[in-house]
Image (tube, rainbow, N blue to C red; front, side, top):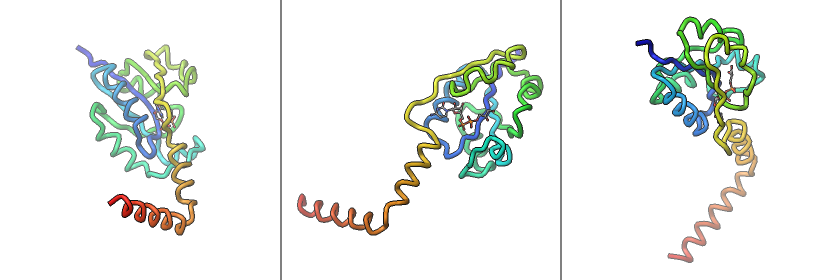
Length: 154
Ligand code: C2G
């Protein structure tokens, strides 16, 4: 009996719970989950700056339970070839892409899944930038205040 094969595509930079939840849901949709991870070069085409290099992003995704195969995503145009090559039954991706991949419908089922709220790589980067912009002495002073308060409660 042919395995039910699912495919998805993404950058998966700074891997977080939103990525994990998506992959967990996708792995429940079929027997085999293929994840195409965007290469660093392709991210430039997507105007997406990535912090974690492709090899590490691919290795992290490959080690997520439920992910059976990781392939590189080089370009926008490879999806139909991938779907044919791997006999994909379902193409699925987050709802932020709603409608963008309907051209794949003649080749396989196309699903757009709810994103996980309140988490995104962009948000993580913003929080990190905000934290790193706090002057070091302010952070040290804050720690001194916390230490002093802890002593009061000892
Ligand atoms: N995602 C999610 N919830 C979040 C953040 C991301 O469900 N809070 C999903 C996205 O919808 C996407 C996947 O996680 O399906 C990977 O997200 P990105 O790494 O941002 O992928 P993207 O840059 O959108 O690449 O050809 C398609 C593109 O390569 C998709």
